[in-house]
Structure formats: structure tokens, C-alpha cells
Image (cartoon, rainbow over all chains, first blue to last red; front, side, top):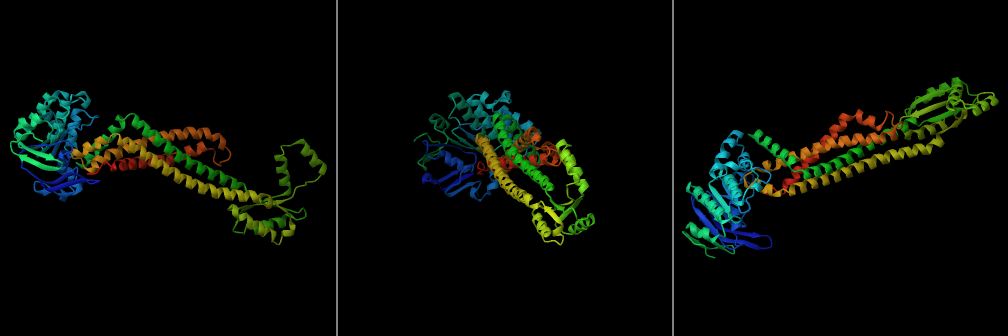
Amino acid sequence: MIRFENVSKVYPDDVVVLQDVDLSIEAGEFISLVGQSGAGKSTLLKLIYAEEEPTNGEVYINDRAISAIKRKHLPFLRRNIGTVFQDFKLFSQKTVFENVAYALEVYGKTNEEIQDEVPQILDIVGLSGKANKYPKQLSGGEQQRVSMARALIRDPKIIIADEPTGNLDPIATADIINLLLEINKLGTTVVLATHNKSIVDGLGRRVVTLDNGRITRDEQNGKYML
Amino acid sequence: MKGLKLWRTFQEGAKNYTRNGWLTVATVVVMTLSLFIVSMTMILGITTNLILDNLKDKINISVSFDQEVPEDSILSIKQSLEKYKEVASVTYISRDQALEDFIKMSDNNPAIMQALDEIGENPLLASLTIKAHTPDQYDIIAQALAQSTFKDDIANVNYEQNKTAIENLNGIGAVTREVGLVLGIIFISISFLITLNTIRINMHSRRSEFEIMRLVGASNTYVRMPSVFEGILYGLTAAAVTLIFLLVSLQALSPLTKGVIDNGSLLDYYTGNFLQISLSVILLGVILGALGGAVAVRKYMKV
């Protein structure tokens, strides 16, 4: 589903962030990406949703090289990838409903479809009663669930979660991880970057460890070890 | 689907316009100042030209003839003068007419009336008033008069006294046109840069939104159009405010221009040409805003 072939990423001034990364993620996998700050986790994720381009090597999604996709077609790639971040990335001026609806508006769903689908997904993430609230009226856990709802509403094949629990308390953290596991059960590939040892150890899934831009460990049923 | 998306981007732009409070006010104020300065420059330029045209209309050469020259020969001279292509019109003023005009002009001043009585006869000369098409033709006409066959009949040509005034006026006309053009271009460029910058600052304060739009899979057009519509709305508001400001300030300036312009005052000019003026201001505002919005988001669209 996702394949990195000999990928390196060098930022200006010769800052090497990723080096010779080979990684293959199968459809339906739940993979945790661990490593210290600056190890290259976020950059690796950005290469998947085409926010960054590799300096060397190639990233394939469904056996299709991202570099071969025309720039103006990248939005279509992103519509199949749901993203969730530590800072939620919600529109502060839009309500919960509008934030989730935006993901459908950008590709031309009708108002009827939006009115139909958004409440369903809000129900799934447990925010039915909060549709008309603004993000700042919600707790961190609730805001993250809004961003999950937005990622899920397009039924993506891949969910990229970059430190989704970084700003959350333990209960909200457990909620979000459980939600990710539920989504994964339905067949969606989940790539989770995290610093949280107990999450990773509790999952008992594949763990890839990054250190200084290189993959140093890749274990099925792995543990959090740096 | 295209129409639906376009409508949505318009709604987004309109929402940004109403939701951004002070940013909207600040942007509109800056755009209003720009539009006001540009339109004021243009209106003043046009007015200056009208004033100059009016003054030029008053320039002429007056040729007075010796008392002995009979009216018939003056009239035949008039006819021959009218054949010059530089000459726009020639008016004959008889001695009696000149006296009448003079008395009228002196407002029946008793001292002057008394002086005329003492002279006993009409002291004024018959004359021809010559108008040229353009001020720079007077020189040619004056030279032609000095070399003409009837040059001995001429008592006086008032050209030399008027010469400097005519030359000055020609100079002023050329200078104002050039200065007006240069100032206009400078003001328009400055206004454009300032407006662009203001919209950029406005957009920069919401740059995180553009990132979210991209992440959620919005196309470039979908990211850009709300900003373009927002810019257009700024431009429309600024244009409306500018037109009101123009009305107020031209009303204040109008008394200064009464009589100098042929057709009334500055205010009359504004109201008389309101359709053209308002259309130009609105068009300029819309172009400035749309371009500003489009350029301002460019750097956030690295898709």
C-alpha cells in the first residue's frame, strides 16, 4: 500500500532528516512510528501525504510513484489520506459541523449529502451534541475527535496520525487510540507516530523505530525502545 | 458541480470578510485611501485641463486700425484673415461698438464719462479680434500681420503684451499633463503595493487555514478563490466609501473653482460624470482587490 524505496530527505543547509529509508506498509496494517524528537518521524509522514518531496528515492502509494503524480492532482491523493495532528488543525472560525463538512465541500459533495453524512460521522466519534460548538469551546480530546471525524468522513484508505495524543490527557488518549483501532478493524491502514511508550507497548502491533533519519528497528508485535 | 464549488468559495470569502472584523476595517481603510488619492489625482488633472482650456479660450489677438482706415477695407482685411488655416475666428468691433463696450465696462464711472465728454469725439479705434485654434499659432498670426500688405493701416497689435501670457499658458498645459500622468502612475503603483501588502498581512494572519485547506485536499483554485472574492468585496466597499468621500471633498473644493471652469464647478463635473467616475472607481477597486487576494495566497499554495 505504502512503499519507501531508498528515500532520503535533505533540507537546505545539508540538514539530513531521512537517509536511505526502505519501508513497506501493507494495506490494513496498524504501524507505530517511534523515535526521539528530530528523528524524522514527521518528515516521513509528510512524504506520504505529499507535503514534502523526497530528495532521493521514491515513495509509492498503491504502486504509484508520488513523483509521477501531477502537482495539480495531489489534492486527489490527499483526499484518500486522512490526517490527524497534535495541534488538531481545525478552523477556529468554523463550527464542529462546518469543520467536518469542509472536507466534503472541497470535492463538490452536494449540501444534501453533507447534511446527511456529517451527523453520522459526528455520532461515530461521539460528538453528536456538539455540532454547533466552535473548537475553542471544546476540550482537547473533543477537538481531536473533530479532526478524526474530518479525516474519516471521506472513508480514506490511509490514516496518518502525527502525535495525535501529544496534547491529551490519559483518558482522551485512550479514546483516540481506540478510535484508531476501530477504524483499522474496518480495513483502513493506520500510521501512527508517537512518543507515548504505554500506547505502543499496549498495542502489540508493528513498531518501526527511527534514529537520526535511519530505520534502526522494525518489528512485528514490537515494543517502544529507543 | 463547478458552479456549486464556485458558490462555496464565494461564501467562504464572504464569511471571511464579515468574520475578520478589524482586519476587514483596516484593509478597507487602506484601499479607500488608495482609491481616493488616485481618483482625486485624476479629477484634479481633468479639472486643470478644463481650466486651461477655458483660459485658452479667452486668449486672442486684437488688431486696431488707424482712424482713417474705412470700415470697408477693415472688413476686407477680416475676410482675407479668415482664409488662414490657423485662424479660428475674426470678430469686427467698430469704433461705436468699442465705445459702447468701454462705457459698459467702466460702469458709467462719472470721471470717465466726463473725460469722454471733454474729448468730444470717440477716441477709440476700430479693431479685429482674432482667435486661433491653438495658443501656439498666435506667433504665426502675429508675424503674418507684421508682414501683411495692410501693415501700414495697423495702429496697434496687442500681441506682444499677451505673448508671455500665451507662452506661459502653453507651458503650464504641457507640464500639468506630464506631471499629472507621472503622478497618476506613481500613485496607482503605490496604492497597488500598499493594498497588496495589506491584503497579504491580512492573509498571513490566517496562514494556518491555508495549510488545513491543503491537508484536507482542497485544490489550488479552491484555496485561492475565497481570497479573490474577499479581495473583491474589500474593493467594492472601498469604492463605495471613496465615492462618498469624493462627493464631500469636491463639494468643499467647488467654491474655489466657480467661474474658472466653463461648465459650472467641480461638483457639477462630479455629478455630471457620476456614472463614468463611479464605474472607474469600482472597477479599479475590484481589480485591486481581486489581484491582491490572488497574489497574497500564492505563497501558501505550495501543493
